[in-house]
Length: 211
Image 1 (cartoon, rainbow, N blue to C red):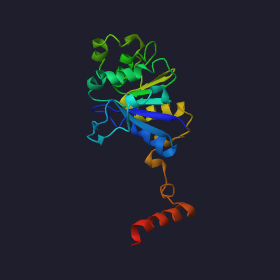
Image 2: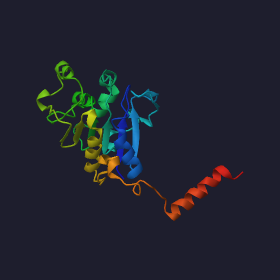
Image 3: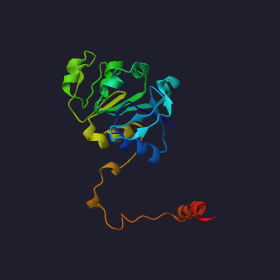
Image 4: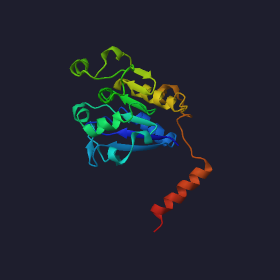
């Protein structure tokens, strides 16, 4: 089984990555670690309070097949977190797949992961003007850009970003992320367990109903 990691930092965006993380974990049973510089509570930009499963000091980045970086409305705390940047630097010349959406490619730029690679990002262009480590000549103004082991995306295209990462790891999702409610009949929107699944549910129910 492959190993995936999500980096956590202040004001990270859950919305931009949950299509990806939910599909990986629920549909395909992939293991995801949630990593941060410190073992403390982090608050997402939506206000959800999250505790990492491990710190970056407890693992090697090459332990993972894919590192996912959510966007953040305030990238500066992560950008100036030396532990996070050093963790990413350790994978700059590896085969680890980096999947970064919205503002988070700025972290990859600082860590040297994007050196000589095409990328996109949702941060304001003045950020690229401010930091010399951003290779503006490689900035491609498209929704999703893939170059070798790096997948980058703008936050608006979170479904397409999820699809790109899932495809990279050979997961066939069909039209799962692109379905429209009007394309489905009442029959298709009525769901039943198999007999075995229903029996399993009834057994579990006994835990709650049998005194």
